[in-house]
Image (cartoon, one colour):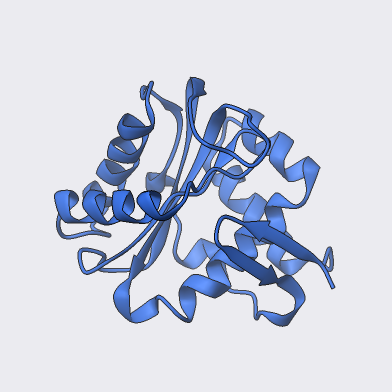
Length: 174
C-alpha cells in the first residue's frame, strides 16, 4: 500500500477513486510566472485567478479560510511544493489553481525546502469530505513521482501541467 504523508492528512492512494482533474482545472487557473515574493502574495495571486475565472464568490472570505487552514498546520509539502487549501462558503466550484513563482518563497515544508510550485485547493463546504479527499489523493499520488515534480518545476505550458495530473490519474503508477 502506497502511503504519502501530507500535513495533517494520510492518504491511501489505491483505495480512492480517481477523478478527472481536467474537469475542474483549466489553463486560466495555471500561472507559471507568478510575481509573488511572499506566501501571502502567492495565496492572493492564485485566489485572484480563481475569482477571475468564476470559481469563488468572495476573495476576502476565501483568503481568510485559507489562512484559517494554514493556522492549523503548514501546507508545505516537500521538493519545493506547497498545497495550501481552503474549505469555504465562498467557493462556487471545487477546483485548483496552480502557480509557479520566479523565486523561492519561504514556506514551512516537510523537508525544509523553499517553495516554487503552489497547488491551491478551493473546496466547497459540501465537497469537503468527498471530492476533496479524491482530489488531494490524486495530487498526492502525482507528487510521489519525482519525474512529475521535476516537470512541475520546469514545464512552461499550462496545458501540459494539467496533463501531468490527468496522465498520472490514468496510469497504473500506484
